[in-house]
Image (tube, rainbow, N blue to C red; front, side, top):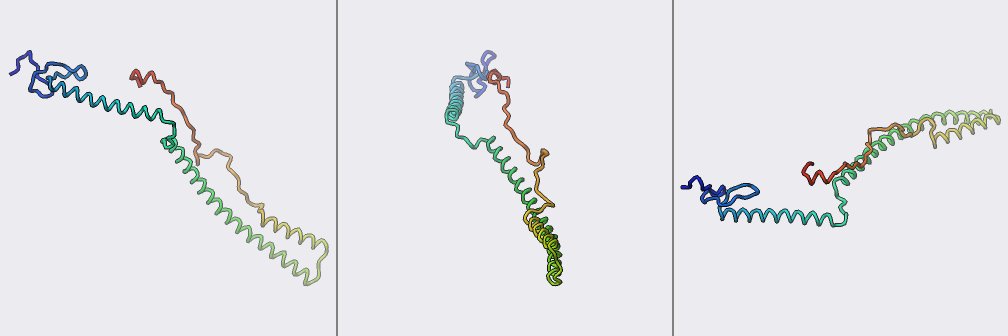
Length: 183
């Protein structure tokens, strides 16, 4: 039975605690103290291993292009390109519809000019002014077919939240606070 002056080992509770660990303040017998020191030595080896691994990473030339910030930029780029492609496809569809509509209107105008030409030839009823007018009308139709004047593609000069601009921001870092344990 242990008397009041003998404190039991806090680890094995079988032997008297003859020494106190300054780190965890546990009272330990000689055998448990040696085991405790061996455990601390293993933990220290782990700390040294992590230290060495970090040192190796810091000393290696910066070829780490898989950093999460670079991946974030690549993801933003891909998303933005996808949005641009979607909008371009939508605009192409709209242009094709407008071109078809424009072609139908031009075909109607062409038909009217063709009827006037046929009537002029059949009736032999035309003068220089008619020939010039028909030639001008045909040229206008051709120009309108090549480059329609009733629609166009234009860029929106307003800033759109559709594709967000990104930027890199550096936060202030004070190593003195980290070393003092204030971060």
